[in-house]
Length: 85
View 1 (cartoon, one colour):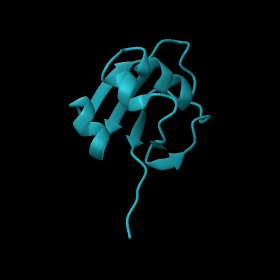
View 2: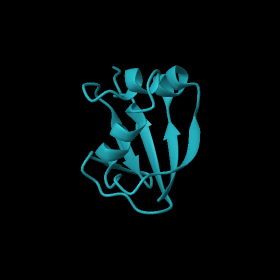
View 3: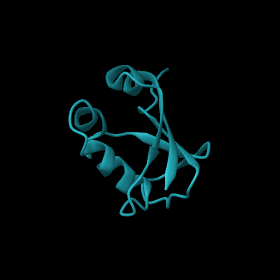
View 4: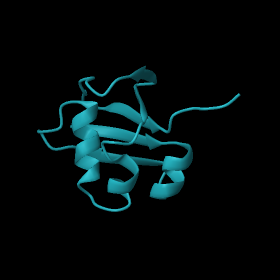
């Protein structure tokens, strides 16, 4: 499955990349699976996307949760939690 990945704010800075096109293995079915797959790349991916880190995700520009199923050609974006006042 081909996916377009986007990384924003501190995630982009820590990973050194703002976007990437990947072909995910068949085992990657959901956003959670994708995140786990990226963590397997090792540092800095494992540091930035580790399971205990709170991240927001968008699927085709709609905010979703980690259980969202993926589709071929989709855009998946990862964001740090938004804070402010």
